Length: 257
Image (tube, rainbow, N blue to C red; front, side, top):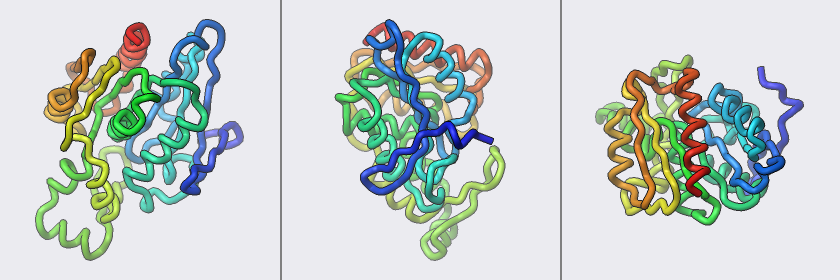
């Protein structure tokens, strides 16, 4: 269980109360961009990736921020009340309030989509981007596209569905999640990323396919963008080797800022 006593809380302009942990930069790290970790769908800031990246940031003196979206982890709210726009606003509001200067965003799965939204809406706050199995537009191109007519009708009439998950309890997919997500799509219009970008993707990922990663790479534009495929890595991307690779990509982006 996470230690609730150590989390700091921030209330967004929309009235949502978010839990976060912020590590201040020290020494030479104070001259570098901070790192912000954006977690995935129904994940929290106590996951192995968030904690490993925080430990590496502390060791190098870099600033670091991890947090729970509303309805996730120890932040207030119910998961089933939330949608992509809410979680984007949570990330945006917290980054604008508690970080100084441009940051390196590290987005995992849904967090990759959230990070791309921040890149689009607030490019001045982004020094670089690293994604791990980024899942842009997954509500539309993943869930909605996979539903047959009967399932779509059930969602519209009942307001939510249970979807089996490989990570424990079924996911509750709400009508609002699908409908609101259509206002946040990033793969339908040009998306310029004018800073160093590294997309990481496992070839054994059954939640986000290599085809999604290739589509994202082909869609965005920028002078320093690379896709790195890791043979055999799954969606968790949390082996020691994968964690070392994520940290290596953050260092590479940092060196090119």
